[in-house]
Image (cartoon, rainbow, N blue to C red; front, side):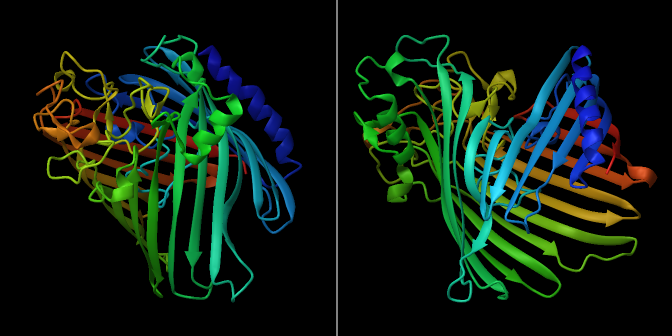
Length: 484
C-alpha cells in the first residue's frame, strides 16, 4: 500500500498546475474488483496498456494527469502520467504512462512510456493490431513523428501523410542461444509510414501504409561470429537487411489498407492488416492471414434516452503462416507468429504480448494445453476469431460491449499436423499433440454514468468460457473524480 502514496505528491503538483493552465486534466479513480478461479478474465486485461487488476478480491487506485498542447499553435508541449496501485493478495504499483512531448508545426517529439497503438484498426473497440495493440505496458522510447495525417498543400490537399521513427529500451530480456547472458539488454525500433488519398471535403478516401518493428540487442554477446559494430547493427535492424543469412533481432510488422466513406448519418471504415514476420508475405505465401474489420461511427449522436455511437466487426485469421502443407514453399518456412529463435519470450514486454492478445502466451492458457516439451512462449498463434464491439448511450449511461469467439489451434510445433519448415521441408511437430483445438468465448460490458461535480460511477463485467482459458467471471465497481 505504501506504493500508492507515490500518486499523492504528483497529484498535489498538478493541482498547482491546474490553476495556471486550463489544458491540464486530472482524475482519480478507485476500484473494487472480484474475479473467480484465481484468474483475471480476458477483456479485463487484454488491450489495457498493462493496466490490469489482481486476481481474486482486490482494490485499485488510478491517478491520471495530462496536459495537452494546442494544435492550432506552431509550438507547444504536454505531458501524461498514469499510475496504478493494486492491493489484494499482494501490493503492486505500475507506471502505466509517463511521457513528455513537444510539437513544432506538424512534428512531435515524445519521450517516455505512452499509450500507443500501431496499425490501421479501430482505436477503441478492435481486437488488437498485429504489431502493437496496447495490450502490454508501453515500451519506454523516444519518438519523432507526424502523429496525425497532414494534408500536403498541393493538388487541393489530395494527399495526406503520417509517419514515425522511434527507439526504445526494454531492459533485461531472456535469450536462449549462445552464452545466454542473464543481463542481456534489449532495444526496440519502430518506423511507420501511412498515406491517405482524398481531399478533406470528399466523402470517399483510401489509406494505406506499413509499420515495421524490431526487438534487438548486443548480438555479439550471443553469437561469436557476429562482427557488426553498434552503428552497423542499428542500420541492419532499421532496414531489415540480412546478415549471415538472417535478420538482426526479432522483426515483424504489417501492411495495412483501408477505405472510408462518410454518409450523412454515419461513417464506414473498412480495413485490412497483412502480417509479416520472417518473410512469407513477400511471396504472398501467408496472404490468407490477416485482420479484417469494419467500423461504423454515428455522425448524428442524439440527445434522447438511447442512441448508438459505434459498431466494430472483425475477423482475425492467423492459422496459415505459410506453414500448411498446401502453402506455397518459402525459404523461411512457417512464420510462427510472435515466437523467436533467439528471444525466449518473443514478441512480448513484461511477459505480455505486444500485439493481438488472441495470440496466447504460456502464462494464460490452461496448463493442460502446454505439454511436457514446450519451448515456446506463445503456445497458441494459430487462431480464427470473430469479434464485435459496440458503444451506445442508454438512460444517462454510456456502455461499451465486446463479444468474441475464437477457434484456437495452438502452433505448428504443438499440434498434430505436418507443416512446412525452413526451405519448405515437411516435418512433424516436436511437441506433438500437446495442444488440443478448442473454442473460446469472451464477453465484456462496461457501464459509466457521469454525476455532478466531476464524479463518475461505473462497473465492468467480464466472463470467459471455453477450452483455452480458465473459466472466470470478473466484476469491477468504480468511482472517479475529474478535477477539470
